[in-house]
Length: 65
Image 1 (tube, rainbow, N blue to C red):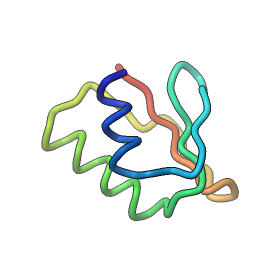
Image 2 (image 1 turned 30 degrees about the vertical axis):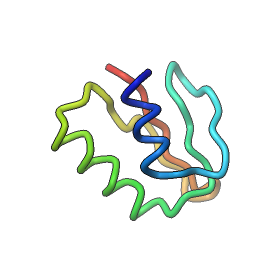
Image 3 (image 1 turned 90 degrees about the vertical axis):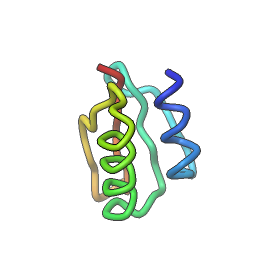
Image 4 (image 1 turned 180 degrees about the horizontal axis):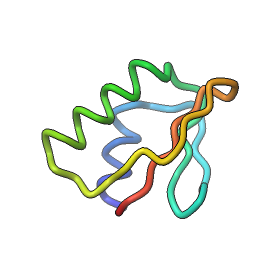
């Protein structure tokens, strides 16, 4: 959960909620946030994956592997 909290601090979503064993980050710029999350995961080798994106809700869902 530590990695997910760091991503939440990085992206600063309007709201978060539990989703499929992870967290849904809502109210964000999807393109920018997806790139920031991917870069943070790759550069820090965090065991986190992006599991879903929803353009209508402007949300990205992530979970720890």
